[in-house]
Length: 156
Length: 80
Image (cartoon, rainbow over the protein chains, first blue to last red):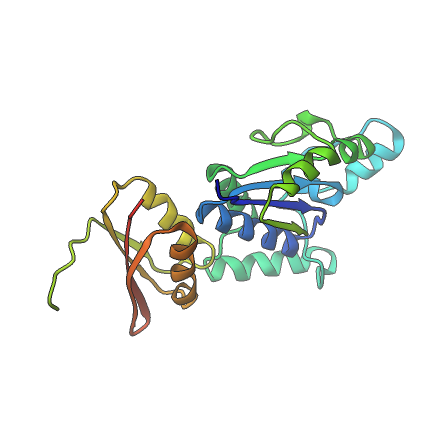
């Protein structure tokens, strides 16, 4: 059988990079590819609910800084949130799908959203903090297994 | 035109930008039987490259694609 898979590591929590990740994922799924996105470190913000996380002092401190998919800013020119606001306004004016809409679309198209167990542990994000529709957390071996059988692999 | 192509579904993709035209197209074609023809109309110039590429990677047949003023019109036949 022809291999038709795409595996992606989503490391970044930047609005613009997440846009690229979800556009490629939805486009690939629409073109008949089987798509898996692995979310690790800052990327976890893309599949996190809008709620405080963390148990320890540092965990809660970090939880205070972490955003959800609507709260993340662009990698350049965010200027304390003004950049995010401006980009959203421009995207709406051009009728481009916003990040949360792209994510919903990805789920609808059957894209697998997989969180990284280790970074959830370190950052004190529990599975209850993640949106519904996300798979059970996995480790690097699971990603490699998926990546080995993929035609396209990306790190974003 | 020597033969008239029967259109089974008209898809309005006007105002949509990447990746929405191909996402909508792929969702629409799933609902149709093999042999059905979709006519799509978009305003995103990107479809001129992306619809042929989508057809190639999904194995569906692109009958035609052309620009008519500010619109891009294409016919896709579901072959599998």
